[in-house]
Image 1 (cartoon, rainbow, N blue to C red):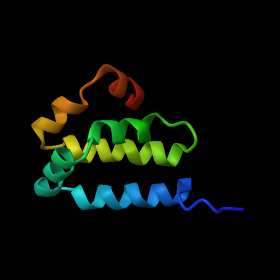
Image 2: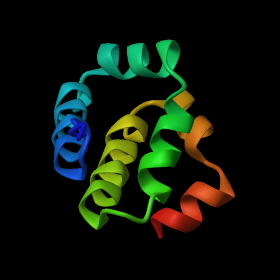
Image 3: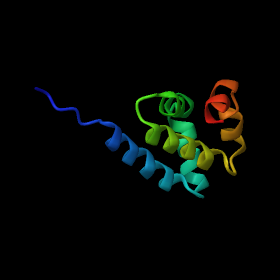
Image 4: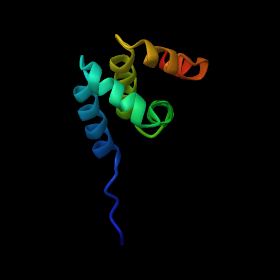
Length: 86
């Protein structure tokens, strides 16, 4: 039987690491925004229903991305995502 390497705890740890990497670091925030499909990534984390911890870390990731970043604020200012975060 094949073992999954991407379980909820592993994904939570990865998202937590990402949150800490971009925390107050505009260069890293811009790198993430410019080089990855960040909206799709964050949306899939925040809207999944298997792990409340992972969804919460996704919300924290959004808050760190948009704090002082106008481009990120406009990217994540969608009705669907904001409704989920609230």
